[in-house]
Image (spheres, rainbow, N blue to C red):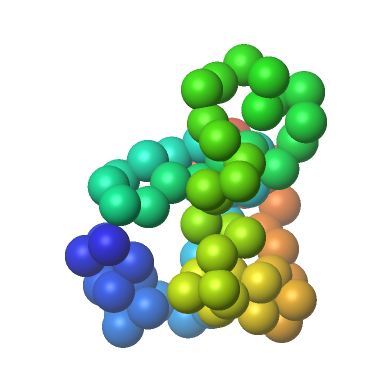
Amino acid sequence: PVHSIAAAMFLAPQQIHWFEDIGYKHAPWENCPQNPDRLLKCSCDPATSAIHSYYAKCTIDWNSNVTAISPDIFASS
């Protein structure tokens, strides 16, 4: 959570990448991979995933308003 605040304060939206293909848990929040094949490889509960929470609506807004960064950029850095 603190990392998210720092990223929002100091980075341009184009410099932030939403990793939708991995799961992440930091109580009380967790996010499940959005790819069904990857979801089967973890113990994440999609019903409690933050992306589907009313309180995390900003994630949906983010995904619809910011152009995604190509994963190739991370592989070559």
